[in-house]
Image (cartoon, rainbow, N blue to C red; front, side):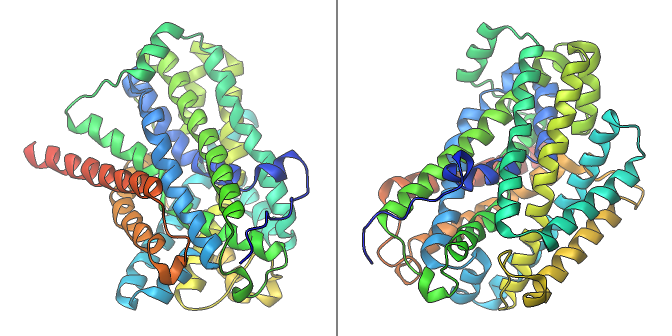
Length: 425
């Protein structure tokens, strides 16, 4: 394959930045916001160090996923189906599919609870209306339209930067807490660390990013698998740039979420919250109504981005796991199973909000569960990106293997440390 630089993509500044920004924003979904807000409220500014620690791990995970999709030309579970036995494929597929459904339900609930703080409409109606609107957009809108809308929705997350400044923290303490880890050897603290790792390295991000690389190639005219196989150095360099931008954006936002809640809720003695909407409401008496509305608008904006990522991710998981094809570049009539799965997953996610429990209350535990699922999935991605049958001559270099190996080890150790504290209790 030629090493010529890939053609410049058109479509303005956001198009040039690439799809990494969408993945980064989706990583800060309402579920993640609830987890980070809980960390800030419980442990205050002393938990800020987690952001710079997570950044290289977030980059490693998403870059490995992007590289798989770009070089092999198929999504994550299609690659696993091609390379591994069904006994390994199906449990992974079911786990990822189920996680996407639960996360979509929690995020729809998050949208409803947050928007209810701004507009006095019953939460159930907001959940149903939001789901219907998003489903119509996925069925009727083109891939290019969805991508553009998603990229603009990422701007909603800057609300957390503004909310943090409205909290007027002690910036000297902020800087000290950022560079000086304060680690507590107890189960509660380790559970929050594992939850933050789990929600930052969520499995749905792997599926989404690998398939986004494929969707981008299809949008550029490479509709057949043989046309998508392989990648130039320039293409991989552009992918690294996209991932770095997206993960840096995501990391900055999670940092300011912890900062805003740590400087207000924790400092004000309110150390326990159970959702992002709860955090938004609690900010008002401490930082003013502007902080409340900014926090809530951030939840709504990124929720409208994240829910389609999760419902589409579930569809990718299913169709690829059973050997079928599906793409957002295809019309619903041309990919009926793919779009039917999106519709069913959306309906189930709505229904979970009517079972008498609030899925947002399970956010931190959901993050912990994801923290346990990350190590084996990441280990598999490391194997595949070093497999010449998958990557050809684009196997990992030493730096990528170092980052990926350290990330895999850290996630294993964090999960093991949490189990150890439980057994010792």
